[in-house]
Image (cartoon, rainbow, N blue to C red; front, side, top):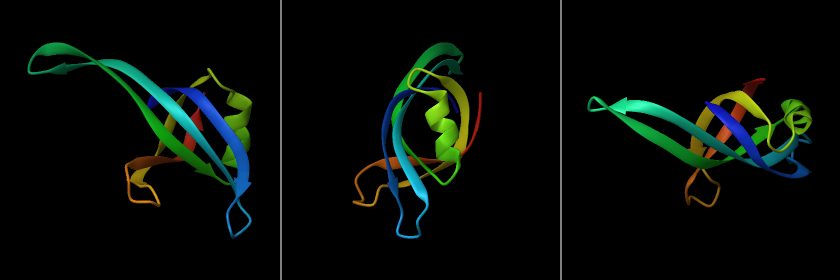
Length: 89
């Protein structure tokens, strides 16, 4: 997903001692739906675990990148969260 880093939380650590960083991503694009152009805009809560967190910090708020990962439910079961597994600037 091509997105902009909107927010960057504070560094925390998992029980296994891995760095964890919460953030918010904003995606905007245009797609075709039923033969008509449609603007797509969304904000998505995300998290990165491990050393990739340092690359996310270096990207900085406002930075754009291609984010790869997977969607899962949040721990409280309300909503979804995108787990970032790779990023390309």
